[in-house]
Image 1 (cartoon, rainbow, N blue to C red):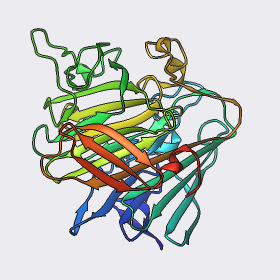
Image 2 (cartoon, rainbow, N blue to C red):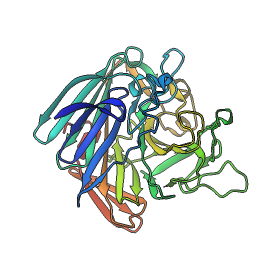
Image 3 (cartoon, rainbow, N blue to C red):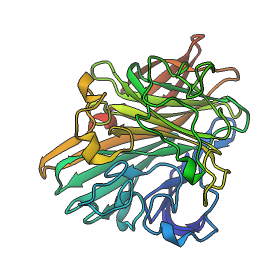
Length: 381
């Protein structure tokens, strides 16, 4: 069953299974709120919704910041070139989508939407799938009629716990990590950053601070570094035939949020730490959220910069996708939640089979979730 409603001041489509209720904004196709039902009558909402939804920022019309919430697809990811004339993260993240259809077949429920001329002549189709008895969202984005090299990616924004350092962040095996290559925060715009510029790191738990004589920052936990906004990027590797993953363990509400993707399509994860570090409106020093953004991009610097040689491409890590002669590209993506026992720590190990995934923490405790992992590599549900 598909309904429409005004959800946190945004016209939205609402779809559901017996385990998930999901809202998707008609502007930007931004996915939130999403209610996941877990055992023991536990219901969780992992995604963040920005606080300015009732404040009427008209200058955000068509921009991703307008509905800012949950997860959304960006083409291009980051800044657009002058020839494209679109807002950062593209029309796909802020402009109006059209409904193509909705259907249910057995346990599978599908919402189909599209946008024409999303970037130059590109058309984008997005299909969202919910499956009964699975606390999972399946998402397939297909881009057609686009030429050239472009950045793209998913931009999940999570709602962190209130307690300091109560969200534990992990990714697939890291092969290269770097902080933002230029100043991320603009003091003239009342922004402040805490991480060093262009610093390389081997582990999220030890990232160089911008302040002299200050210990390295632990970027594997959040909320942290109150009053600052920061960005870093991690390129990951995955075993043959295995998806790449990102994970965030909420130790206050005892659940794990995860994303899965094909590392050949989205080889990096950007972490955007927004901890009351921006004071101009509408941020106004009140946003505490974290972006866990799985991308093919060089930070958020856009297609032109990402298409040039950079610290990632020099290590063989792709930062743009070449669409060649307008051939279609499909990007499958999976997000979900799993209940965790009290005291569950950072994800240390991951494994998957045809019908589910297993995450284990440093102590070897395992949690499992049912899902159809073959979807990540392009198969139908």
